[in-house]
Length: 200
Image (cartoon, rainbow, N blue to C red; front, side):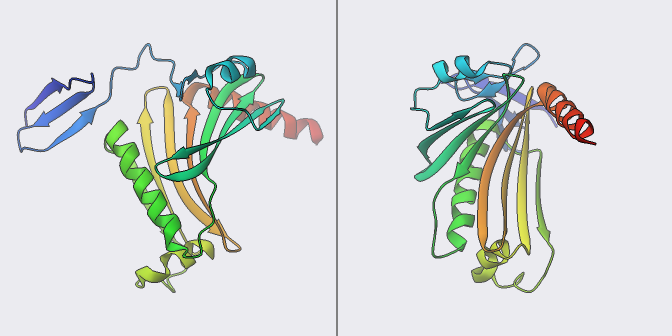
């Protein structure tokens, strides 16, 4: 089926299909180093700190932590470094809800915003380890908190992989959007393995 390409006034590309459907097009990324917010993968801690408009709350040898409002909710921002090079970053929901389904609502709202920005996800999966509350939507938040249910949505953005995850255990629910450098994730894995082998 034929596809047409159009560009919106804000510069975003759109793919228009012959069946009347459409989606945002990802820009060519062969020369895009990728990154998170205003930072690029591979930046040093000092460079990321200089690029971030927020005030740093926690800083150590391989981590910078900030707080921000995103999509109407409080989030922590974590920049993760390996060998003083930015390789991963996360938005971590930093709120506590009495109604556990509110975590799912916050994640759903963030997923919609990410889909508007980045287009259709590459993958969306739900995992049920215990079907006790599977047919009772009002208990889905409790299912996540109990470790019975988790869900993950993934986008591939050139040099960046983005995963939005909702998971839990011991009645602690985590909503995390993690951005990872495709190239530097291999370096991170290699250095972690080396550290483990050094301890053996």
